[in-house]
Amino acid sequence: TGRNGVEDEYQQRFPPRFKEPLVVLVNKNTASAAEILAGALKDNGRATVVGEQTFGKGLVQTLTELQDGSGVAVTISTYETPGHININKVGISPDVKNACPIDVEDVVSCIPEDTVWR
Image (tube, rainbow, N blue to C red; front, side, top):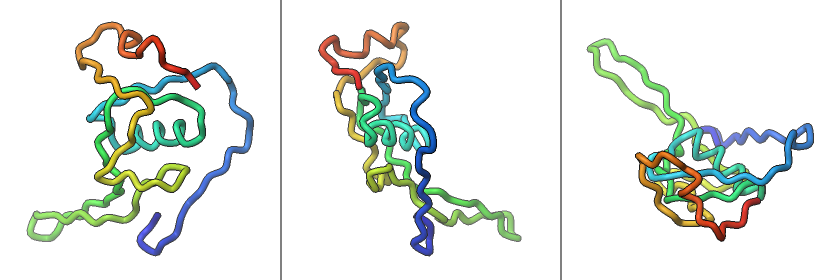
């Protein structure tokens, strides 16, 4: 949603290219566009989100340098999921909560065996 309350929505024009089940792994460092992708897949019932609550970076900002060398950040828009959920300072809640160590070598081991893949 932009500062004038204008919403940009994009509709799917083609059927999904593949229908295999998906799991998206997220953690507290998953932010911005990665959160929107996870939220879109979750809202559309296309993937199961596994991991931790995401970061909650839901603002789009522009940075402008001022004459004195300082700068100002101006929020120009916010991110929402397709379900119109504003993720700012909230993040995406996983369908299955399961923290995965950041240094794990086999990420598949982070997905509990009883997870239902969408």
